[in-house]
Amino acid sequence: MTVGGKTGGYEALVALFRDWREFQKPRLVDGVPDYTAPAVARQRRELETYRRRLEAIDPSAWPISQQVDHRIVRAEMNGLDFDHRVLQPWAGNPAFYVTVFNEESDQPAREGPFAEAAVELWSYSFPLDPTSAGRIDAGIRIIPNLLAQARTNLTGNGRDLWTQAVRALRQQSADLAELASRLTESQSTLAENVGRAREATNGFAAWVESRAAGKTGSSGVGVENYDWYLKHVQLVPYTWRDEVTIMERELARAHALLAMEELRNAKLPSLEPIASAEEFRRRFPAAVTQYMAYLKDHGILRVRPWMEGALAARVGTFSSGPREFFSEVDYRDPEVMRTHGYHWFDKGLMVFEPPASPIRRTALLYNIFNSRTEGHATGWEELMLQAGMFDDRPRARELVYVLLAERAARALGDLKMHSNEQSLEQASAFACANTPRGWLRMDGNLVRSEQHLYLQQPGYGTSYIIGKIEIEKLLSRRREQLGERFHMAEFMDEVNAAGLIPAALVRWELTGEKSEDLKKLLD
Image 1 (tube, rainbow, N blue to C red):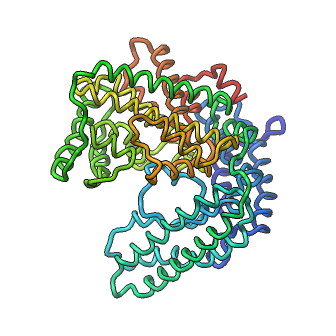
Image 2 (cartoon, helix red, strand yellow):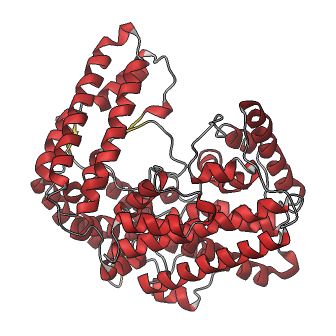
Image 3 (cartoon, one colour):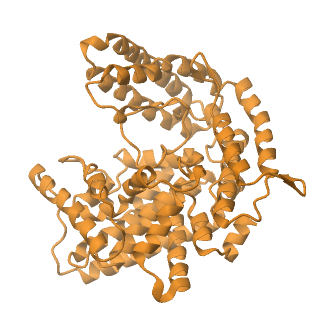
C-alpha cells in the first residue's frame, strides 16, 4: 500500500526488521567475520538502502506501541551509522576482538561492542557432549584468523582503549586455559584448537601491549557526538550537559541521605560482612526467599513460579576476600543486591512471557535496552527501601545509598572520559574517591573494567541513573492517571509486558503521552 509517497504498514516494518538484522551482521569469509576496510565500507554504503526503506514507512497513524517499534528500528540503524562515523570499534578498540566469555551477562545481550563470533562457555554443561564440543570448536577455530585480521584492521590512536584491552585479552587467555583443563581425552581436536586460540590470543595481547605505549590520542567520542548518540541511538531525552548536572545532583543526594541514615542508626551495631562459608550458605538462600515473599505479600510484583529459582541460581559461593565493591555490599546484607537482581527476572520474562511485538522478542542492538534494564534495577533498590523492605534492618538502608553514590560517581567518569576531560585512570580514581567507605578500590579489578566498558559503550555508565529517573517519572504519571485504580503489581505487569526497550519509550507507550522532554526526543 502507498499513501502520499509512503509505503507499507506494520507488516512492512517487521519484514524490514528481519532483513535489517541479517544485514547488520558482518559477512563471513571462510567462517571468519569480515571487518576489513573494504567490507566495512561496503556495509556503510548499503546501510543507506535500509534507512531509505524505513523512511518510506509512515507510522503516524499506527497505535503507539507500533510507533515505538518504528523508533526502535530507526535507533538500531542509527547505532550502526554511529559505529561507522564515530566509534569504529573494529579499527580503534582491540578489546572488540575478545570473543570467549566464561560468565553469563545479566543483560539481554553482552555489554559493549564485540565482534560477531562469541563463544559463551558458561552456556555449556561439562563434560561436553559431542554436539556441544562441536559448537564450541566452531567458534574457537576462527580465533587465530580473526586476531590476524585484527592486526590489519586496528589503526586507532586512542591510548586508553589500547591500554585497557590488554587486560581483556589476558582474561580470554585464562578462560581458554580453563576450558582446556575441562576437556576429556576424546576431545583432542578441540584441545588442539583451544591451544592454537590461546597462543594467538597471547600473541595478539603482546602485540597490542607493544603498541599501546605509542598511542597518544584520546578515546572519548566528544560532547557533540555523545549528544547525538543519546538522542538518536539510546533514545534518552537528555544531553551530555543535562546528564552531568543529574549525576552531580544524585551523587550529592546519595551522600547526604547516607549521612542521615548513619546518624539515625548511630546507636545500632554496624553491619559485619559474612565471615564463613556456612554463614554464606545460610543467609544467601534465606535472603532470596525473604525478598520474594516481601514482593508477593505486599502486592509489589506478580511473582512467577520460576523467579525465586532464577535468583537463587546466581548467589555464587563464599569468598574469604579480598572483595570487590558489590561483594562488600552483598556480604553485609544479601537482600539488598537481590533487588538489583531484577535483571534475572527480565531475562526470564523474555523466555517465558516474551513481548507481543516481534521486534522486541530479541535483545536490542547497541545496548539500547540499558536505560530500562540497568535503570529499572537501580531504581528498584531505592523503591524497595521506600516500600519498607529494610525497615527491620535499618543499617541495610545505608547500603542503598552507598550503591547510588558509586553509580553516580562512575557515571561522571563515563561523561568526563567521553568529553576527553579525564583519562580512564582519572575517571577510575574519581569513582573510588567518591564511593563511600573505601569499598571501591584502585587496587581491585572492578573500577577499571567498569570504566573501560563505559569508554567502549557511550551512555552505559549513565544509564543506571538516567533509566531510574525515567521509571520514576513513569510510576508517578501512571499513579496520577489511574488514581485509586493504581496497583503496583499491575503497573509492573505493564512495564514487563512492554519489553526491554528504552525507558523513555516505555513511558510514552504506557502513558500515551509525549511530555515536553519526550517531544524533544521524539518529534
